[in-house]
Length: 143
Image (cartoon, rainbow, N blue to C red; front, side, top):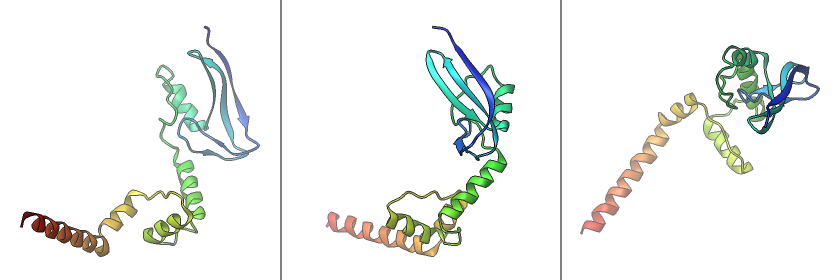
């Protein structure tokens, strides 16, 4: 089976996803689109210019979807979109967790938010109470 394909630069009429970094490609932005067969599998993937430049420099390595680092401008855009979707980002992590649980959806917390929650007295006191309960249960089982 032979490999074949064609890649070209396109300007998207709608939003797409970069298959290299999994970040959004906004509508109206130029991006690289490859269609063809490689290794016996049909391929159809898109990349930001920055991701394509990285790919082009290291073309001898196997392309793994999602293995590229997201360009800073795209990461900032994705962060802003996530904040807007979560109600402006003015809520505390606890409020965001409660809102997501009411909706039945998942939630992404960054490392700083997780750290902030782990340092919170409420979490510490709940953990301490849980330890006391566990110790009482263990002592009750020994008697």
